[in-house]
Image (cartoon, rainbow, N blue to C red; front, side):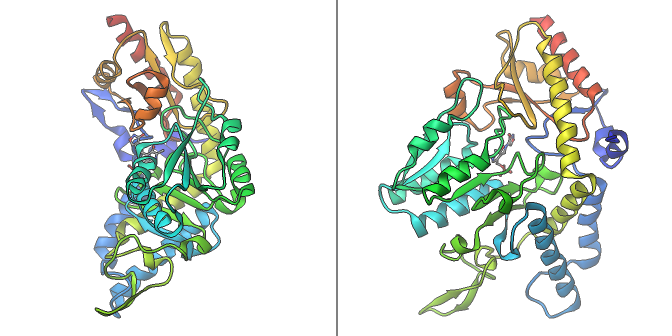
Length: 404
Ligand code: 7TS
């Protein structure tokens, strides 16, 4: 049995009232709430071990460095990577994907080469490639999907050519909830000698991922979406590829030896970590991963899946509601529209009932264009949500719909 009531006790903010009503927090795809264990880890760092890492020979600096490098090991284990040299700390998924686009392009892209993304990408897996395209002459190819929100795998297979250098796709869509078949995507891409990057922002917290078992070459995710602090994230990269890629930013820590004539770079992963890292964030991220591991990612996936099934069942019964995305395999989110009510109106009125959802294009405008809609209302779940909260959402939607 999944003991959601005892889990909720770890998240003080869930007891909050908004507008005099109990908070129903269903915006977990945007960011998750933090358990006390993570909040305590942050204050413990500042109270007991704060000092800059990798530099001082003094006690506190060594302790902070030890904790940060332990955190790297925790991340390695969590995603099943082979080596901590493959774990690069960043500010989040967005910075991880910008680092990847920049450095991968410098190392591997010639004019006319192609990178394949999908039509359901977040802007952070589109715009960095467009920025690089302006400089490098790379061409972006886009995998289409069917009307339910499943990628067209036949079309994908046909798109790979001898100019394809990388496939970069989201594992889980933050709008449709589609779980993309990463194993098949990797198999097909690798058969053409093409590496695969996965945007794990919405999957790592909800289904987990094992980069070696799936044989993915790069993985990006954010700490704040997996119960960790804001401002910290991860880029995993296959060592043999990272070794060929140039640094993304220059500064302290990423160098071997600097002179005005010639500068050499540090070894992995430090080559990609210029400047003082968010070591407090990194250490607290490890606390978040320990917390998730304590519950168990499989138990989390199973519980959230049943909650989503329940949400789909309850929302299906609402007159005039249509789902945006009915994928074969779903995780995390359910998007919908009700009659011709603007998503922002629905969101504002639900908010006044204490229910936090997200509305709009969800940073996926090309996907909105594909669907022919300006936006959706999106409820996104966590393991601390309950069936009663889904009931509150359904009742809230019905109440708002009744006003129009
Ligand atoms: N990729 C996906 C699939 C995402 O859902 C998000 C954030 C990002 C990348 C960017 O992550 P960041 O932590 O660097 O900002 N998605 C959302 C969302 O759906 N609502 O708010 C942020």
